[in-house]
Image (cartoon, helix red, strand yellow):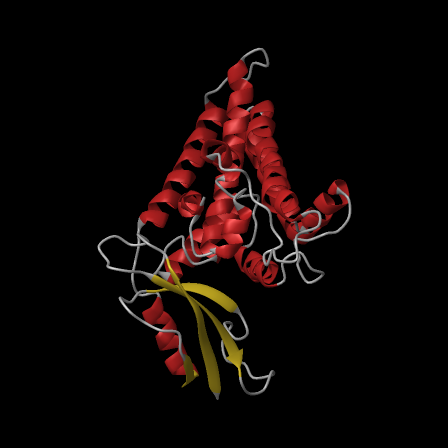
Amino acid sequence: MFLIFILSRELHAPQMYKGQEQTFKFRYRIINSCSQQSRITNLVQQRLDVYFVKTSQRAQLLQVSEGQGQSIIKQMVSRKDSRGIVMAAAIVACWLGLLVYLLSVFAVDFANPLTYLFILLQTHLYTGLFITAHDAMHGVAAPGRPALNKSIGTATALLFAFNWYPRLLPRHHQHHRHVATNLDPDYHGGSFVAWYFSFLKQYITWWQLLLMAVSFNVLRLYFPLENVILFWMLPAILATFQLFYFGTYQPHHGEHAPGNKHKSTTLATNHLWAFLSCYFFGYHYEHHDKPYLPWWQLYKTK
């Protein structure tokens, strides 16, 4: 049994890792050259983005066995960068720390502007959880540490309304492969409202709703009901809308020029607004063009 690894389109991504002369990123596609029915690995026929670090290396065509292919993949992501791990830990810590404070200490007062400010801040941190899981889908939450990368993605997805990372992962890569087409699970050609409900249908499952309901009823036993609604439930709903609008609807709706290979638009350069609105995810054309960049480096493309 053989796999063909196609390494294509050498790109220079400067300063991806400190202390190295140059960093090259290769997009490769794994194709099962034999039977479609053979069970090789879950990587077969998936298009992935990885880091390939060399001072000089040219794209090449390799024909290797499954075991050799797995070894090559491990070598290609062997260089490690801990900054994504620090970013992920910071977002989780801020989300959890603020949530504990808001549930157990903060007294809700609708005449107090802090109540509304904390709702917005917690919404932003919920969005950060999903953006971190999204980075893990592209292998950049913990580059070179696939098990840790998957763990970060799984944990942050679960914290965001019990999303299941293994379910999100193939859907997101399908979105990148077939952006703004009928094969894109994130795409809907209808109105804003129809698209939003189609988006929710794609990503919300009955067991998520059940777990949310159970969690809600447990939390209300220990914390004031209005705190649970305002700072645990409402921010998750608002963050879903935030992710949909800035990460799906705004960049992908409408007609795109024939030369727009990613069928995406991008925000005008404004790093403060781009961060506050959705962790630079509004720079969406740049994300599709360079999916190997984590969210906290995406601004460098503008």
